[in-house]
Image (tube, rainbow, N blue to C red):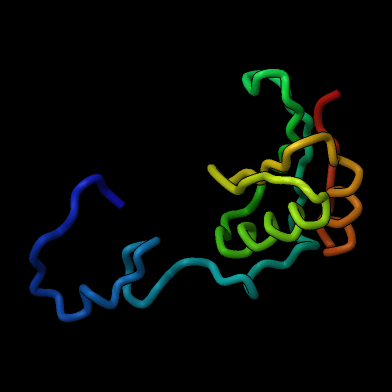
Length: 116
């Protein structure tokens, strides 16, 4: 979307538009449209720019924000720590590469450990 807010529109479906994609009917990908076996996710450990704290980052995610925000919640619960889903990446606080790899493989994703 853009940086401005539309004040008036003569489009009768204007209020029915999706807030995320701006289309009616919504063109956002649905969670059921994602087939885990078709995607390879990468996991890396990051320390730089985080004040010395270790963070596990899952990246190269396909575009499906609702699915991956739910997955981030499940991973945080599994690891017993905090984290977030932003900029199409899942960040989990701490070094939990092996736990997250095992869980994602159980879901059917192909997983690759990236970095050192």
